[in-house]
Structure formats: structure tokens, C-alpha cells
Amino acid sequence: MRKKIAFIVQRYGLKVNGGAEYHCRIIAEKLKDIYDVEVLTSCAKDYLSWKNEYAEGISIVNGITVRRFAVEESRNWKTFNSLSRQLIGKRRLYQKALRLFGLLNAFEKLQPIDSIPKKEEEWIKCQGPNVPTLINYLTENHAKYDALIFFTYLYYPTVFGMDVAPQKSILVPTAHDEPPIYLNIFKEFFKKPAAILYNTLSEQHFVNQQFHNEAIFSEIVGVGIDPPKEIAPQSIDDIVKPGDPFLIYIGRVDPSKGCGILFDYFSAYKKTSDSNLKLVVVGELFMDAPANPDIILTGFVADDIKTSLLLKAKALVIPSLYESLSLVTLESMVYGVPVIANEQCEVLKDHINNSNAGFLFNDYDSFKNSLNTILHPDFNTTTLSENAKRYVADNYSWPVTIEKYKKAIDYISPR
Image 1 (spheres, one colour):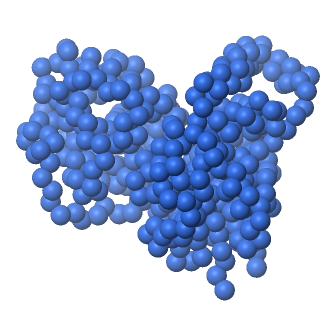
Image 2 (cartoon, rainbow, N blue to C red; image 1 turned 180 degrees about the horizontal axis):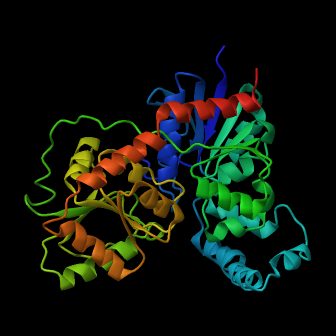
Image 3 (cartoon, rainbow, N blue to C red; image 1 turned 120 degrees about the vertical axis):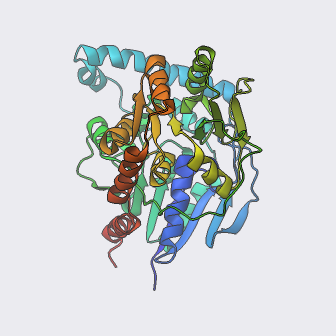
């Protein structure tokens, strides 16, 4: 009899716009032929409001059983912002100061010990999605699953779900150096799971350094990237004028993804350049975008259209400060598309430095220099393209990824 495993993730669906959520879905779909796979998630599609948009109950998504639980209440932004200021803003300030003088450990030893302080528990509920019925279901039914795989450390289902059966729980943290990870609640949380599967070596180093949890079984797994798909030729002339060079951004259009920086830098570049360069932005808007004819907002597009745009782009731009893997970077590299990435993100910096398949920027001048390089008439992308394809083939294959998941599941459920 096949082992039964459950993936627990905050959102799930074909139109859910998020890297960790997409990562969870493709892993679940790759494992469904090996295990009896279910997904436990919320009814939300929008991570800002957590509004219930999917129907509660059981549905089938690409052959996988998905159990959806209604969000009890949408995000209360007034309460959430107030708690964030109290718990994260001020805490980060004194942490930086005390760390600078080597006094942080001594100071924190003097603080009252409380595994889940009331305000932090309230912050997690506001962070959401607040789905107590999912936790209740897990509490009553965890015995029928051989393994529980939690995606993303930051959200309610993972934080509270991890307490149900930590001995059979695998965490895929998608963690990086961001303010919330310094909350007290995560000090013990990162020591609870039976196994942790990291996306990158830099993520593992950061988590181990922060939480001293090296004793937990762990692997650097990441994800497999499918070989380039042959697509039917698609016209993109109704999106970009034929002959116009363009950059492409793919993903959630959100300030937290660095899109404000991208819009500012691109707009500044256009003011000083006579190039007819465009910026094509593919993804759902979670912020106001500038009214600029050179910035083309497509929203969601069909996969063939997205791939056609990617293949004709001068480069993919990833301005994010915080990434634990960046699937879109790897998926672009598999097609040999150069990447222009934010150097302040360690994961992106590692991808570019290890692949020699793109450019890094840390300010407007370095961003401008990257654009000038790829737009130069004599610039040849052949070497970058070959480097990109080789990097993905050598480091992100599905057989290796699947074997590492199987190893972790067998470790916690050896029958």
C-alpha cells in the first residue's frame, strides 16, 4: 500500500500567484504517482485579504485531492500593522544595536521565556490565513497520513499545524533574512519538525545560524526544472510592438518583490535613454503601477504566451530582496534567457555568480549599466545562454529532487 502524505500550504490553485505556492504544487504533482497525495489549504486566493474565493470542501486539481478550509476572518490590517510595529519594527532596531556590540545573547537570556507570547500568536493569526478548522481537521486525522509536508514557515497553517504531529512533519521553510523571522515564536518553531528541506545552501546556513537546529535531519533539495517545452508559435504583437526590445518581469507585482524599485529604475532609465526599450510585466497586480506607455502590464497570460514573451525578451529582471529559491529565475535559465537580478538577495546573487548567466545590480547605476550592456549592438548572448542552461541541468534535475523527498519521507515514516 502506498504511503499517504499531506501537503499543508496557505494557498493552492492553478491561478494562485506565488512562488512558494507554485513550488508546493509542482512538488505535489511530481509525487502523486509515488504516494497517495492530498493538499490541505485555505479557500483564499489573495494573500493580502485572505478572502474566501474557492469553494470549501474537496476538489481535484491536476489529479490531486485538495481539501479547502474557509478562512475564519479576513486580515485586519489595522491590528496587523499595529502588532507589526510593536513586535517587528522596534525589536529589529534593538537587535541590530545589541548585535553590533555583542550583547544580544546576554540580553535575550534575561527576557521572560514564553513559547508563544500572546501578541505574537495574535500576529500570526492576523498574518493568516486564519483557518482553525484546518488545524482541527489535522488534529483529528493526522494518524491517517504517513507524512505532513508544510510549505513556508511564515503562515498560520504551518505555525500552528506543526504542533499537531511534529514527529511526522517535514518543513520546507522557504526562509530568508526578513524581519518576521526574528520573532520569538520562531526560536522553538524551527526545532520542531522531524526534517527540514532547504532550497539553497545559503538558506540552510542562515537558518542554522539563527536557530542552532543543525541536529535536525535536513537536505538541500530545491526543485527540479523541466526541460524546455516545445510550444506552438504564439504571436505577441498585440502585447509588444514588433521590433521593440523589451525586458520581462514575471511574478506577483508587489512592493515586497521589489517591483517599486524596478518601476523607478526603469522609468529613470527611459528618461535618459533614446532606446525604445519596453518593460513587460506578467502577473497579478498587488500595488499601483505607474502610468507609463513603456511599462506594459499583461496580468495573467496563458503559458504559451508567457513562454513566447520570455523567449523574445532581452532579459528577465528579478528585483526582489527576498527569495528562497526563485523558480522564475531557474525557469528562465532553462530557456537560456539572461537574468538581471538584485545583488542584495543572497539567493539571486548565488544563482548569477554560480551560473555566469546574467547581471547583478545594487543601485540605479549598476541597473543602467546592465541594460546598456544587453542593448549594445555587439552584445552576444550565446555564452550567457549556454551557461544558464548548463547551470540548471547540473543543479536542478527532477530525479535528484524526487529522491531527496523520498529519503526524507522514509526517514520519518520508515515502514
